[in-house]
Length: 293
Length: 140
Image 1 (cartoon, rainbow over the protein chains, first blue to last red):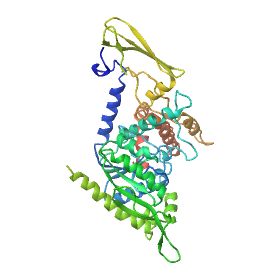
Image 2: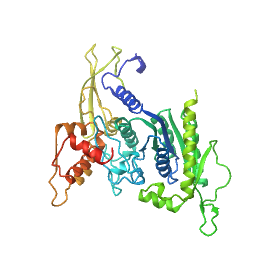
Image 3: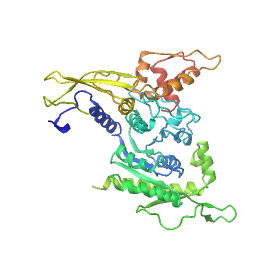
Image 4: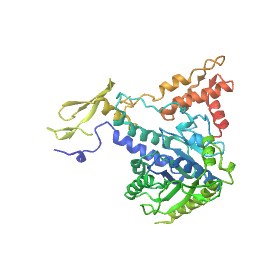
């Protein structure tokens, strides 16, 4: 009796061929993107989205062609961070025009179209039990966005990942081996533990991990001006990755993010000053990837 | 998944498909050699899982369990017009074709946003020029 692998094709359902075609179309759509960079963590609330948007803006300010994909379909924040307001999705000549922030940054986020008072809902023939299919559906929709948006020629497409340690691994497989990763953590033992799991998972993938960013590394005391710890964590992190930089907590930056304003409005912020060297470090490491055999 | 006619040791081919009917699809496979046919009947979970891959069963392009637009509810909410505003806008065939080239799940969001733009700018019909103007207006 023949086995599965003895039979060519699938008899007409064409499912595997369609999946392969999707992957090929995605590769073609992203062929003009020089670097793919996923900003992940595993831990929620560490500032992945903030780091993604503002590093993207800094890279753009350094003359690079940059866009951001908000891959957190259920908690999209990039549209708000970018100050986009209600920018609609508009068809282009051959797909979806790349939405732009007021600063000219390309940002694709469901947050621009789904009000914050509403949950992202998917229609289904299987009423209830969405845990059996929803993750698949979400990745399919992200694939459609990657294939359909007219990204054009970009130096870097930054992808803001949703929280969840398993997500970093899933996105490594979904985005492909050329996507580099940066992990964001805060100096708490809890966060380091979760991010450590993400780092371990990524170590099993062929994806390059450029390093990690330590956000909320401390706060500047208003009285004495010293940098003081926000979290009691001490000692080294539990993973072998370079630290790309440490960003102190600044309530002014948090408020700026809520308002969707540019970093230029906070020139004296230590947090903002910390981001510049991180952007430069990222550029150096991305360029170094191209030099590797 | 593949189907094998065991007596003939030959792959079976998709003959017909129907559904989803209450979430179930019926896929009939047949053997060219002996004519034997078997039907695969999916439950709603199986139908939805395949649909979630964004594929269609078979090459005919008929609906093989593809989910409906997931934001239909939002479309219905979003198309409520303000008092005194035009009832709505019409779309030309060309503009509709452009709309249908984008992912189905964001189509209603795009439609709502473009119609809002059209109404705000005094248009009663969305054509490709209005789409181009919308792109320019939003800096795309």
